[in-house]
Length: 237
Image (tube, rainbow, N blue to C red; front, side, top):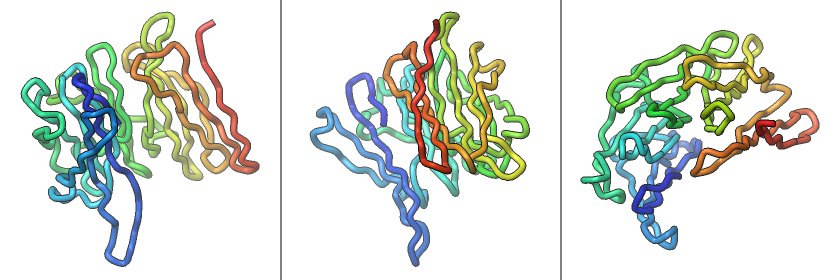
């Protein structure tokens, strides 16, 4: 869910339901202009052929546009017209890419210091951190082994002593790969390992959520064997 400057709420639906006719189409968008009292429903993605769900929808202050990524089969990135000329409840969505190989069905996004960072969703394949300053040109950095086959399921900003940090979680692993919690303190130029883990024994989630960039970061760690779960708070000393 995201909110535009004129306080329009935009939500997206995610789910994986398979029935006798194939994947149930859940790629709906929802709009509210009265603080969530009433909602309008849009099925335009389904009309365009999206057969599963939506991964992210987010307002970009840098572009003054709405961004949306669908998944899984088509993996498109969509941008609206500038909200200076577009109705947030009826945005003119335009696809940035046509095929999943061109990068698009992102599962995470943050915006910091004039840059937009996306995390890819190629579970079992090669994953990337993708960066753009204008929504038109994109650069990508490959996630190296042994984490390469893990999607970046969430990214969160934290306000550190030396500036904004980007935190990312890569929660998928196989017998020969690892999961990873990492962060960047230099606008995505380099990344630091916080810890690696195995999905068969632990589940880790970034659970921070805030409209403002907070000084505290929260993440949870669950032991898969006994289901014990702890939430950790990270702040500068």
